[in-house]
Length: 317
Image (cartoon, rainbow, N blue to C red; front, side, top):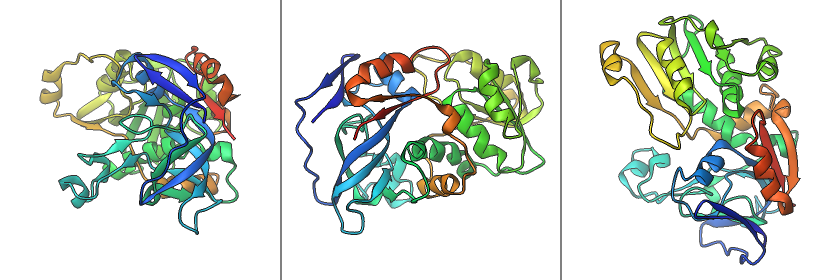
């Protein structure tokens, strides 16, 4: 089968990869659509020493698996867990000590004709959700994880820093809570997507220092972190949604003095994400900037790395 292979920070489209054989408890999925995200780009830059097929945002059709899923469109949670370690036993499987992670840690990913995942990771896609839209399930779930970690109310001032792919989804999902939300970024056209949904937006100068209860950093760069940090009132909460390829310098003393709560946030609830897509409460269509066939995956990655480009999809089958 074909697959986009990463090794030593180099991408190669290979055609000699064997079709995987699902072990007991797993299903074989023929991939139909997959999205390139910032984590894929960070892996290419060396964020984590991964070798294998990239890709973790996908929609596919089950070809081998339980009867109730065969020939059904599915999306899949990316962490394959052991079910036995202390985190699995305590209901925190995304931190499984023995996990593999689709296209990220010791498990070939979705930029290929086929992939394997545990059956328990798979979720059927509602019939009214188009395939290219369902490809956003994983990042929408990641955005919703914020609401699993903290409680938000209409009285809280919340700042989202970053108008890229993740920032757009975080802002749209947080807006549904009714909180007093401001999203800031660098690109007028991207901010316009959020303004069209009634979300207040602005550039960095729109942020008042020490005025927000919660700030969410979605840029993955030091400038974005600095904006998110200075926006917080004492005892505010800073949520980090992005991975960083390099080290981040910060003023730890100010975190102590202001008693800032710092929260890392990544994977989230797939059923809730699919429900939002089925109810059309999140709009992802403006985020799709290009679609390429898998055979042009190298060109797709070049496109995805260009300044201002949002989501690039690979159409696989």
